[in-house]
Length: 225
Image 1 (cartoon, helix red, strand yellow):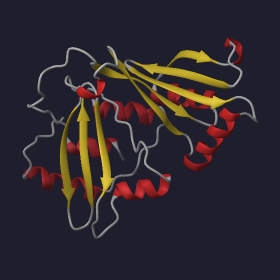
Image 2 (cartoon, helix red, strand yellow):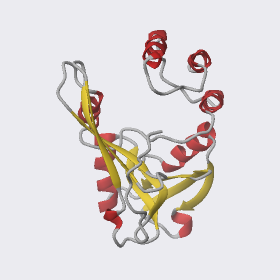
Image 3 (cartoon, one colour):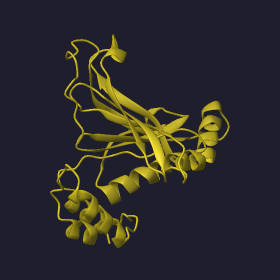
């Protein structure tokens, strides 16, 4: 994990503490919540719908340890919220609409972030990267934009397919990635197929790298097959 030694003074006000929850707009909130519970081991946390007096939208909150996802859908066919959600879903499909943070207060909030800027470039692909984190590094976000290379960068591919800027992926922290992947596969989660050449190239690159991978790559590659 990347860390930063020059963080400046630790903020005393306006501290950002952690990610609070992520809100998704989806076509069917109940079905989406069921997927996260069945496939990824989340548990139901909260509900808002007709039974609680919400007549325009339904929301299912699911939780696993400190991770909270809120899945929202529209209830009625012809109001402003439904039209807004509908346009979003037509253009992007199910996806992240909002990221909420836990903070002590909002005063001086923009003063508590630190960042480092990295330019990643090869003749094949390129991207400009800004990593933003809070002082304790309990919140970390990587902001990417495409740069010119011989091949289209994965960032530009995402923007082209998604239709605009957005959240390309969400990283979930786990103390044991191998067991986590094995358990998810047992639950029916489908992973991308990784060619053997990926791990061959990775082994060669790690020989010259300043980092050490603790996991056995033979076990990792077999787990993801």
